[in-house]
Each structure stands twice: as C-alpha cells, then as structure tokens.
Image 1 (tube, rainbow, N blue to C red):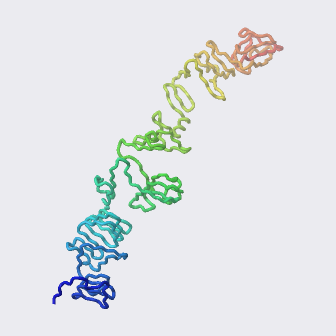
Image 2: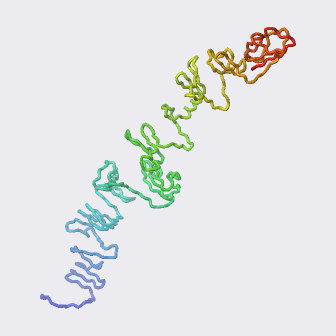
Image 3: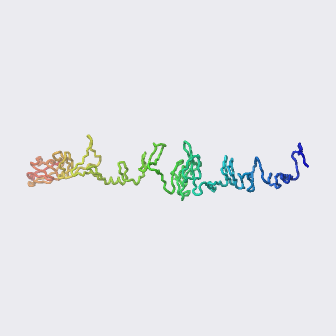
Length: 460
C-alpha cells in the first residue's frame, strides 16, 4: 500500500534504537553499537564506509590523524577520465599538478607540476629526460655525461656548450653573483670552492679557492695553515702545479695590490717579460737563474759581476780595461785624464800613489814638461823641466871620503848627478866639471886629493 507524503514532524529529536538498522537491503546500514554508518555494506571498519564508488561534488576532509585519507587498492582513486590515479604508492597525473604545500613519502608523477608552497619529498623525484637519485642528493642530467643538468636564472640565456653540467644566467646592470657563505665562526671555518681531478679525493689532487673565517687559527687540515690570516682569501693547488695565465696573444696578466684601480698595478706579465710598477724587496733573499745582461738596462747576475770584477776586459776605442789595469793598444800612445774647465784630477785614497819607476836609461824620450817619475839610480823623485831632469830633494844627506894622494875616482853610496851634489874639499866648495865630474854613483876628480884632504859630499 502506498503511503502518501505526511506533512509535519513525525520523528522526535535524538531518536534512540536498541539494535542495528538496515534499510533497503543494506542500501543504508546503521551500526548503533559502534556508532558507524555504511552505504551498500554492513561490514564497517570505519565511522563511514562506502562499498563502491562515491561521486561527490565537494569533499572537505578534516582530521588530526596523519592518515587522513587511506586507499587500500590500486583502484582506490580514479577520476572518470583517468587523468589522476593513485595505486597506493604513486600519484600520477596525465596533465598538470597545481598545489600549495606537498608532503609525500611515496611518489608524485605528472607532466607539469606547480607548487606555490613547500615540497617535501622523502622518496624519489623522477624525470623522463634525466635520472635522479636520492642516496646523497639530487642527480639530474645526461645518464652518461651528466651534462645539461641544471640551468638557473633568466630563461633567455644562451647555452654555453654541450659539456656544461650547470649554467647560471643573470640579467642585471650590476654584479651578478653565485654566493656561498659559511656562517660558522669557528677557528677552522672557511668557505671554499673546490675542483677535484678524476683521480683526486677530498684530500688529494684538487684546487681550492676560498676565504678564511673571521676566527681562523691556521690549524685546519688540507689548507695553507698559518700562511692565511682571518678573512684572507686564497687560491692554491694540492699535489700538482698551479698555472695562472692568459691564452691569447697580446693579452697580459696583471697583479693589483693596495688599491682598486690601475694606479695600483704592481706587475704586468706578458710573453715578452714582466713590467714592474713598484720596487722589488727580496727581504735579503736571492733572485736565481738570471741571464747575463745584454742591454744597458739589464740586471747582472753574481757570476757575471764576479767575472767582470776579477778579470775586466773591455775596450773603449784605444783604451783597454782588464781587471784593475787600464792600458792602451797604441805602442807610443799616451793615456790622458782630461777634466772639464779648470777641474782637477783627484785620486782619493789614504794609502798612496805609485809613480812610474825606472833607471836613467828608461826615462821617456822625448819627455813632456812636467813628467814625474822615480829614478832608481838616484833614489830620487825627478821631474822634467822641459830641458833636463831635476831631482826632488827629500832632505840633504852627506857622504865623507878621504884622499890618499893617488885615487881620483871614488864610489858614492847612491846614484846622483853633478847638479844634485855639493862637493867640498877641506871645507872649500869645488866647481863641477872644473874640479870633478859625476856619472851615476862615481865621482872623478881632475887631481887626486892629498892624504890629509877631507872630501865632503852633500846630496841634495
């Protein structure tokens, strides 16, 4: 019998039932014992259970449990067009994924994904154009070479080649930087960019560009130690050579110190040499392997200087310099010291000046007026006055001889001349050439002095 619609309230609030209630063969099932509701099922393990598919316009889930939504089989979640599926381990979208924060312990797969918040992945992030692993981080790029793994920055960049693993592109009218900072202020803290050879390790065959921390104490291993002070920057190679240079002809390598413009360039290196803009202070150390000088401005090494000072041989015109000797290649050529104007020639020494030394036959001929020499026969310094040689007296000395009424030739104790000797016989001065003559160290009287005659000879 059909029952027409009854208007008004026929059920009172908070209706109570003592046993479970099934409507239309479990179309709706109420478990009043466990306070659970089922659709097309009386087997209820949760507060609300749907046996088959539920088509919901809007679904809001709110739960304090981390397992807010649980799917128990591969067909648990599927849209009518199969664009979004979840098999219990992988969430797959045929199109785009747009979300706020995403936290996943399984897999997320989609053509494009847009996340406006955080993405926390405890599993793998897989891409069809590369390979990503998560054992120690994210590895992406060519499966063999690793190239073209990461491009960061503006999208309008120019690819810099196929052998590029990571490229950073900026577009700003200021410095564009890739910055790394170690914020630790410990005594061994530093910030480093390290490049390692294929056979290198964390401690071998690498090059290091870095900056020491503010409290650096030089005790850090695999470093330059106490050669680096706090906040110093450094560049060094470990286990191999460090080569710094320019590879194109005509380019130079410049070193700037103490400033930030061209006024502080202290050295410029090129393929023709090193141009220094400041003094070189070697701190009492040596400069080794210097070649022998060629140009006037070349530096000389010790070997070259020693050879010059020990055996100088150089020719300037007809003058020859050999060690400490100055000579002339001309047989009769004079060596002239000619100061300008009324200047004088000064020989500065505290020891002495050695004059030419020789006997009478070795006197120069012709002699120039003013020629000075030491005569070994007279034992006197003599000077040529333009007509004859005059001895320079160094003090009057004398010699006493005695006559024997026979001898006319007597031997003197030195070589002299008639002009350089005064001869007195018994106190009477004798006239040269009339009473006697002098030749070398011999004096010859015209008449033999008597036995009682005293011959007094004064050398002047």
